[in-house]
Amino acid sequence: MYLILVGAPGAGKGTQATVVKEKMGLPHVATGDLFREAQRQGTELGLLAKSYMEKGQLVPDEVTVKMVMERLSAPDCARGCLLDGFPRTLEQARALEQALKGQGKSVAAALYIKVSEGELLRRLSGRWICRQCQAPYHLVSAPPKVKGKCDQCGGELYQRADDTIETARKRLEVYFNQTMPLIDYYRQAGRLKEIDGEHSVEAVGKELLAVLASLEGGKRVRK
Ligand code: AMP
Image 1 (cartoon, rainbow, N blue to C red):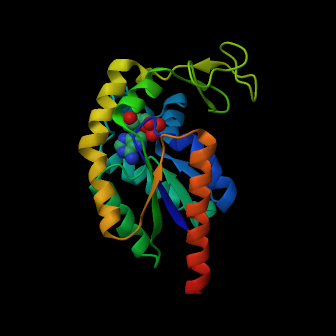
Image 2 (cartoon, rainbow, N blue to C red; image 1 turned 30 degrees about the vertical axis):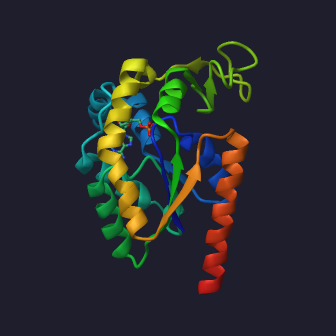
């Protein structure tokens, strides 16, 4: 089953991805994480991505699609995966559809975590992340027990370079201009599942699980 997690930066995609992964047993393919890993390794792709990410802009479609297609061709993605942060443009969505279609597959659902702009800005500008396990924290709403340390693995917490208030604003602008059209794209295809992302992490997770259960039920009926 191929699932897509859609939502603005700060909507809680990374946090909720864990819920989906555990429930569905799917590999998690997060394009932002892939780009950050390429940067850590100092590859050509990493250097190129850095120049866009620092400004809060999207990495060009051609480069992003190529990276994702390579990842999807790995054996662990043969029976599906959870795509997080991809597609982010209509062009990417079409490229994904084409690639899956060529293998007789399709996207089962786009899980859209909906959060208002004001709440997104508040969340993004206080976000800190564990360098080791990527667990997210928030200075006000979800602070770590010990300042600067991850509760789960003790790793060092850091603020992503693109989580400063100026870059956060830019990333949201990019999201509303370039990624929002995807919502209509998947709605028209009858594959959009809307989840209210303004509630607590637990409540959003619960709603997401209910949607996943309905998808699995649908799959059984179709068999
Ligand atoms: P994220 O971790 O998903 O918030 O992504 C961080 C940054 O990586 C974004 O602001 C973009 O610069 C880049 N990025 C991630 N996914 C994509 C994508 N699907 N298309 C283009 N750029 C992306």
